Length: 466
Image 1 (tube, rainbow, N blue to C red):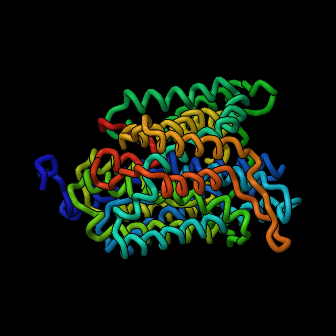
Image 2: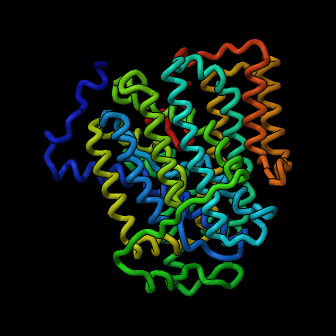
Image 3: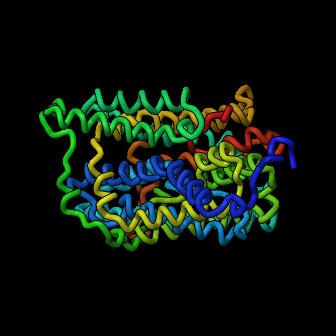
């Protein structure tokens, strides 16, 4: 064991039940802000595109249930050895945005709930792709597989994910620029100058503090620039204290599958980066034991499970890795307690109703940081993995991915056997990048040669000096 972890606690039971519960709550708060933000953003995409609110699936309560249950599924697959929490994935936001705006073929005139169900069907298939990669890694080894998915491919794809959503952030923020700037400023302050736990939860602090400002403005009689109320509490009064989450079974269609499934290229690399980061943090090689194939299987099954019930995709959370570093308590039991707390919260509709009153301007301000950071993280992916952009092959791959990912704004539609199939810009970019990397000579990427770079392939807010 390395010197930095000699004081680490690997069995939290020695701390007693009260401290274990407190540590579990701390892990829940670490994932909370980012996890609940995803369904809020996604429901906004569908409401704006379809002109009616979502009433089933992709809600805060469903998301919390799927995050908690998905974390427990992951721990079973990982032999209860890996201290990882699975929360909502930001990587699929672009896919949900595209699905919400599908208006051709079977999607023409489709109800908002049905359209969301088809998007979740794509999430299920994306999750199952993890199982395919897990099997291939088990059979041929991680190094051979990763040569087909180097940072010169995944980095530009991540950049495109963030940039494709920039317009949505501006549109939400413009409903009340003051609130948006408050939310953005708070996140920046806590992310740069925050101490301890507060530095790990900048999104949660941004949401809480800007919401408090919105409440003060509401009580002072202020309104949005367009004259509308800043906060609307009607949904809180009508919601019950205890109830089932609004689950919705997914549906499958080739177009929505082709929208969502290719994003798994980025999230599977995110998973591998997170496993590398957790291994380095707790001084255990989880890629070797229980094995990357097992952790990928757990993440994939958790994602497929979430999509099946109408929830967003799951992913291992770097925020919780930050809590591990902060607390020096590496026992996975504490993470499982956090998962149970998330499940319990999912059965309190009034809590979800409070979250749903968040003004669009706050969502816009948070999105300013979030979408920009997703793209910046893609740049970090390229830089920290030391991708040599003086090489023509790497410039060609990155350039083609950028043009495909940002240029095919309406996707590429074709017909097979009378069925209309649409490939989205991100899908085209992923396919083009993987093919070019495979056929162009000079691929020198080797997984494990640069551990710091391998740890930086996740789509989450990370402070390198935490």
